[in-house]
Amino acid sequence: MSVDEAGPGPGTAQLAAEIGRLGVELEKAGFDLEMAKQVQLRQREEIGNLERRIAVLEAERRELIDQVAHRDRLITAIQSSRSWRWAQGLRRRLGRR
Image (cartoon, rainbow, N blue to C red):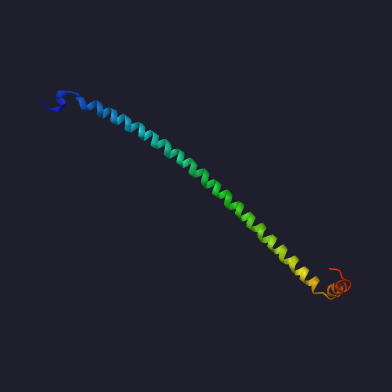
């Protein structure tokens, strides 16, 4: 007698249960994959936002560095002027700092 003639054997129920379990695991894996894709998309968008913000902040930083350099040049020009040196010499003679 062949397996087909004997009808469903005791292993058939176990096989069906295993197939059902694997189906559930596959669905869960599909759901997890979809959630991971959504998270990855949000992270890419956030990275783009942060990169744009960094570019703006770097531009502001360069502008501030330029302003400080300009003010330093002005201070140097003032302090090296004849009238500034004369006024500072007078202050020292009068005991003021």
